[in-house]
Amino acid sequence: MVYKMNLRKIKSVKGCVCSLCLLLALFTLAAYGEKPAEKDADIQSRPQAAEQTEERIYRIGEAGGMDELEITITKVEKAAEWINSPPEGREYVIISFQITNLSDEEQSVGAGDFQYVANDTGSRESCARTTGVKADPDTFGAAGIAPGESFEGSLVYAMPSEMSRIELHYIKNYSAALKFEFDK
Image 1 (cartoon, rainbow, N blue to C red):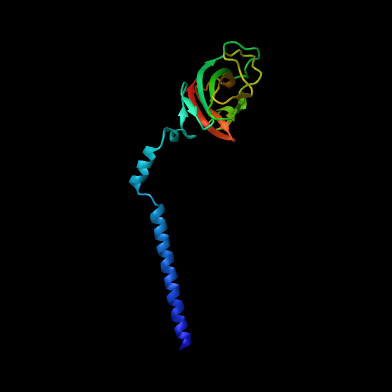
Image 2: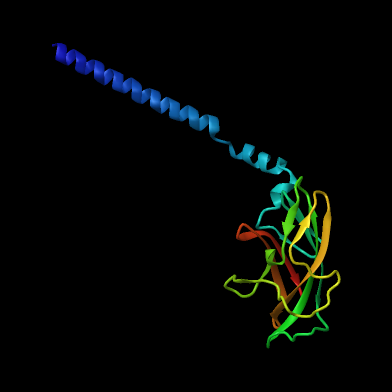
């Protein structure tokens, strides 16, 4: 008889524990779940910075910003003169930038931080290093930019001659932090 009574108590306690777990799970879902209308309102009330994700594509003259830097492509032109000829099937394209440091610390920007998408597979290429192309503003290597200061510079790329639409990436931590697209 004592055995049957303990078995009932165990089943009763088990049922209570299961019920409490179920209630706890429901309360948790209710507390953290969002209604669709609230979610849409939240998205609409977020600041413009939400638009500045890696999926946003900027055009010439548009400032692409992140926490540390604001980058603008100011000019794109084909080079008219050079010392070292471009490889066969390619032409030199000069891309001019204005970069502003938005952070409280010095930021470093280098030529290798800007790469264009070279083909349909998504592979990227860096600037051409020994072109002899004169650019205005002059080309840059690595530049430290003080807080609140801006830097202007140009990079020269040996791009395929048949390529007319360019997608340029600012690379940070091995991925495209900002994307720019324009005609050459």
